[in-house]
Image (tube, rainbow, N blue to C red):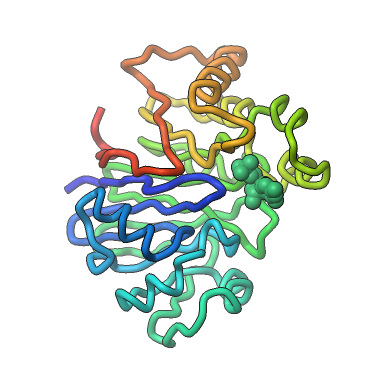
Length: 268
Ligand SMILES: O=c1ccn([C@@H]2O[C@H](COP(=O)(O)O)[C@@H](O)[C@H]2O)c(=O)[nH]1
């Protein structure tokens, strides 16, 4: 059957990823306007009407901007833990009871034969999470907006075939950049965002022969570039003794302004 996915948009201007497995279609986050999400769906020849639900990682606007509108437009259930529900309540508008689903951190929910599990991450939100998608043969994990890679996150995602992993910034570019010091301090903190170096360090510990691809996600437009991110992540891996050949492992692009091509998790 296979797990297929496309990262529709990634970065602080809006995040959304669609995962399909057999007859199941799920979206992680809806951080762009419903109009923009519909346009991105069209680019990947899908419709919001095909979705079975939206899984929320946390309540920051770049993850929930279009959440209420999409849920109402296509009558979609929203899945989030109770603390996230409480935190997004004011931003999401009216959602009927039947579309308010609780997905507590650490729980597993089956959507057809696709098992979805959430895991806690460290970020300055009410109760932020990442998600894994596993059909028993293929496994995809999505972990963005994390200040650091905890042992728990590593355990949750280490047996994945494909990762969508944050590589937000180059530390030096951020330090020299235009953001106010408080914002820089927040981004660099344990409840901020993963740097290129930190993503590479985390990958060097995660590499076990199973992970075939990692999509570098949530790149800062001010303090990163895809080529720099790829080079820094690889350098950070190699400096920790983690060398790979290009046919064994790939770092893949995500974009803030266009979707990634459909990818099958089980593809070599
Ligand atoms: O003026 C700003 C710009 C950004 N932020 C937050 O910082 C992080 C990283 O943003 P990037 O766009 O990836 O550089 C993100 O959480 C933004 O929301 C900010 O608070 N103020």
